[in-house]
Length: 57
Image (cartoon, rainbow, N blue to C red):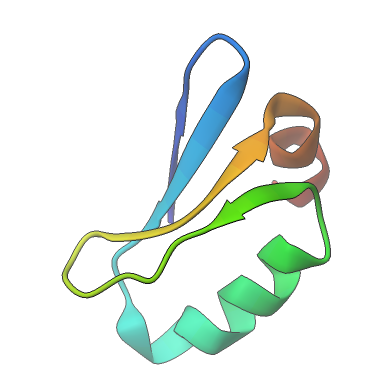
């Protein structure tokens, strides 16, 4: 998985669709702002706050 951090927000990308369900479960128990519906790789799972990124790592 990969996290791209901007000043206040981050987008989380995931390249393994096999583990997508497990990863989304972890993500959405954190600080998710916006749910994305990924259709192709790399998958953009969510936009979250920097605090959420720290919690999720």
